[in-house]
Amino acid sequence: DTAVSQTPKYLVTQMGNDKSIKCEQNLGHDTMYWYKQDSKKFLKIMFSYNNKELIINETVPNRFSPKSPDKAHLNLHINSLELGDSAVYFCASSPPSLNTGELFFGEGSRLTVL
Amino acid sequence: SQKIEQNSEALNIQEGKTATLTCNYTNYSPAYLQWYRQDPGRGPVFLLLIRENEKEKRKERLKVTFDTTLKQSLFHITASQPADSATYLCALDLSGGYNKLIFGAGTRLAVHP
Image (cartoon, rainbow over all chains, first blue to last red; front, side, top):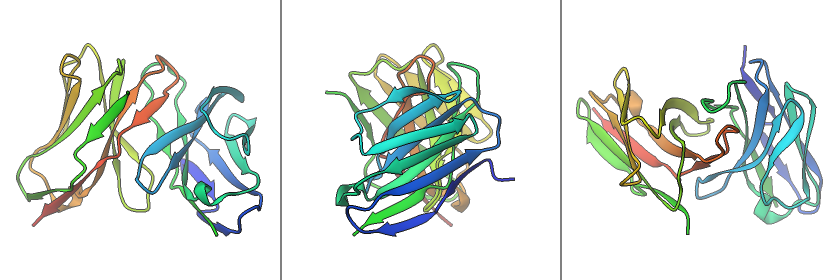
């Protein structure tokens, strides 16, 4: 009965590789997000999708490409991984009502680039 | 420049006391401010939301204040318990509807028995 689930939880890979993180929510929410939490613990928004449409795209390198096949899924694909991509990536979702939405976060995917 | 600042040092308090955490921001005009709790290795969990026209919000042992003149929010936990030990994050909602939250780095709270 997990609300927002991400896979994998841990990912260790070499520089230059391509990897994906998957996210699914069973809350019926319309909006999903990807956040990055770096070593200093700052959570920074990367992308937001509402009903499969991109609505927030922060200044993220275009090596990062989100894909939303339906409103319950938002996957993150990363090409040509770099050392600086090492971080914890959190998926989140929020309910349909505007202006009052709290975020429901997944447990995070820790990416380590060697 | 725009900044969100939370106490960078850990806050250590005795069980039963009131914990007060501070969130200060500059050069933002958020419509909403949210507080989250994050335990090690877990995702943040929503606690409270307060709107710019609200001075105070309460939920059980939690209380949040929001002073848009001082550009500050205070987060209080009364009758604190060791189980309240965690990192608490404040987040500003700047997007006016799309939950584009800007997070502070968080304050780690340790409640000692």
